[in-house]
Image (cartoon, rainbow, N blue to C red; front, side, top):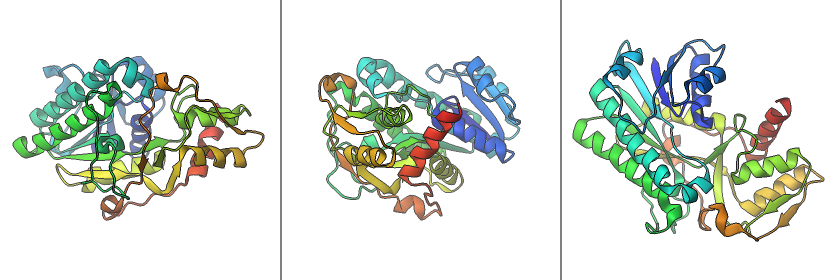
Length: 320
């Protein structure tokens, strides 16, 4: 099997590439920064690095450079996107362009090259603020399109609609993975997302500082579980359909997660400091327990809990 992965140097893209290479698949790493990709995957067999910024339409030579012996037997996993919350507020235009233009270009490549399968990585944020509990794939709530922070979820919503449109109009076999917040080894130190800040605090034996009351509640997903979910969808996902990817057992508030970590890793404590919270790009407060019944019906199950996910991430940082 040949896999093409965009966003190949990101957390999920890199984990996918390493897992696929380990099992002997041929993998094409599409990357804007070729040198970074080559350093990241040095020593791994079966990985070809190809330069491609997905925000730009592919040129005619790209298909030949992708080294596809049989496009109908290939799978394209589209993982490229802005992921930093601060970027959604400070660079909303770029956030939208990367997601929407990138997805359109990926789908056009899949259509013209007749690639057999596409998996688009979306987000739980497309649900807005639903009132159902748990949230299944057909449950949606309010999302303010005039809020700058909505640049990310609104763009993902449009990208999902593009996937559905290409599936209907052109017969592109594309499946959507709606991921919750995903982490584990591979997250780089200095990442500004809340879970990474918590892990940094534990590693450095300092207090976890909350810049909100921490009432937002969601599920999380360990990186290995996310990879297995995406590969399950590559093999079994229905065209034009979306599937939630999360570990329901990890559902908790941000404050509960902070307290759990502090209790497991003294002398770290939890401190609340609300000053300057508005400029950090945090999503509006919400509670969202994702239903994964649709994905689990395909045979997938999450295996790693929240504390183990943190322990593995922190251990990877200690090892350098």
